[in-house]
Image 1: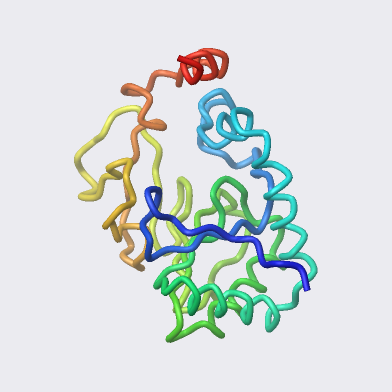
Image 2: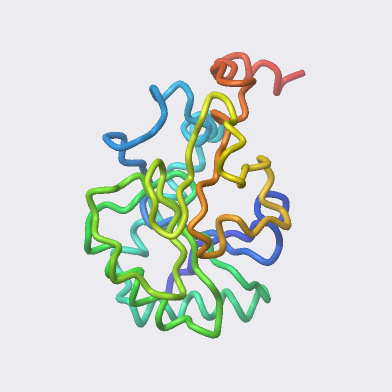
Length: 204
């Protein structure tokens, strides 16, 4: 049996959270960003070439394991790592409605074990029958919460992403919140430095 591919948040989202990717790539059609040059995740995948094949292996395990099998693997992660939350996706998205339905079944099977949460830029999919144990943050639209990328904070929504998930529960709870996030925290709407600049700076 091949080892189940996952990571633990640690400095990114906290040691109480495991991260599993379902899909290797994003769904560009519905993305909020003006173009891919703003995308932090794409930049990191270029900066660390090992990310792509690793996520492809995670997508393969998502495709090959049925809901019961996938649930058993996640339970193993929960008990081994002593985690409370499972984040689905770092930069990918649901491929189709089948992904949503499968994740709902898995979330139901994990009630009382761990809470699942994710993000999606797919307003065309149906989330009405989502599990009470699954928090879906819509990118630019409301599901359990709305994650809204803005060039300037309006101060009107009452929820602001602090660019650090450590100790934060905004995206992990069904709050009906609109969570404002500065455009990748790249300097009030400015584009991130070019990949070449980041690569050269990393050599210093």
